[in-house]
Amino acid sequence: MSGVTGGSLRATATRIIHQVVHSGQSLGQILPPALEGLPADERGRLQDWCFGSCRWWHRLNAELQQRLHKPLPKRHAQLESLLILGLYQLRHTRIAPHAAIHQSVETARELGAHQLTGLVNGILRKSLRDGESEPVTDAIRYSHPEWLVAKLSANWPEHWQAMLEANNRRAPMSLRYHTGHHDQASALAALADAGLSAQPGQLAPHALQLDEACPVERIPGFAEGHFSVQDEAAQLCTQLLELAPGQRVLDACAAPGGKTGAILEHEPDLTEVVALDSDRDRLGRITENLERIGAGARLVAADAGDPDAWWDGTAFDRILLDAPCSGTGVIRRHPDIKLLRRETDIRELADTQLRLLEACWQTLAIGGRLVYATCSVLQQENARIIQRFINGHMDAQLVPITLDWGIETGYGRQLITGEREQDGFFYACLEKNPAHWV
Image (cartoon, rainbow, N blue to C red):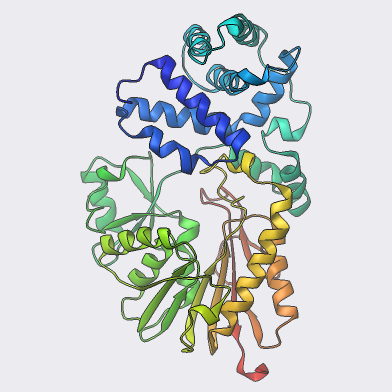
């Protein structure tokens, strides 16, 4: 695909957006193959067009539907995504408006819709001339699905608007420096020598935030494990686990291995770290990440919710359960979540989360600690899971998190997306209390 023309690049973006909206495929699945072989500038444009169109799809689609006098023919359904892309370029990029309109029309021809080029031209020109009308609902204004706006406003009446605004901003690039190679001062100096400006993190002790994102190849010593890319909120798990030499640790849903690596960097003298994931293919990502930082763990492909299939009966002193979730705390990194996630998914996810928590609890030593984490901002997946679990377990003791971040929910702490430039995350600490062992 090297040397793809502007029009053809738009055709590729149009097809990708259409697949996300109408086929339920994620950008993480379908965008990487499309980027292969493209020059750097075209890779950047294709990523921006796909991410930006998904980020603003709900708002742009509301505008588009106002301008369409009748539905598009089914055989030309991809024109919806082409027009969304054109509107995104008019509203949110510096592309010259005449170029965005002209190349959208040419792309309509490329997609076989010769007879509809006048429609494409007319809608985009009228949109440019008239400007954007005032959104009629909060869901349109903030470009989110209505069900998610309703849940967030109910869960976080004082924060929901700021959360939605944060979801529409691009996430910063955060690093974790390896204390075996750097302290904070030398890490910042190494980045500066490489022409990268960064600031110390606000929450995690080994976090740095780059002023501008960059390819990992530009990060000095990245291939040797001196730095890892990891959001600051995700780095907090190592503090909450209270790791110490000689402990046996389980990372229950480990792929792609960022937190496994953080655990091994934080305490290199652990007796054993077991990294578990239900997807065997994803274990390769864990291996790559651990080899890069010079660490190792015992990798197991199994469902954490079925200990009989993988547990050897030796209890763990520490367990990290980074449970599968809605991803509503990382929408700014994955804007297609707005299009892919459904309200009905949340109950199913909550059932899975509770099942995993129940199963992992069986493998925890008396006096041991389990840290429950999600990158969700929905209480149904977070505080209510912990509440349900504690109500059913006399041997479970909630350990208050006294660190200075997040909102205390009574069942753990919730980090609000973007509050200190970090992702939305939830953490709760549970200890198995021998006094109530049954």
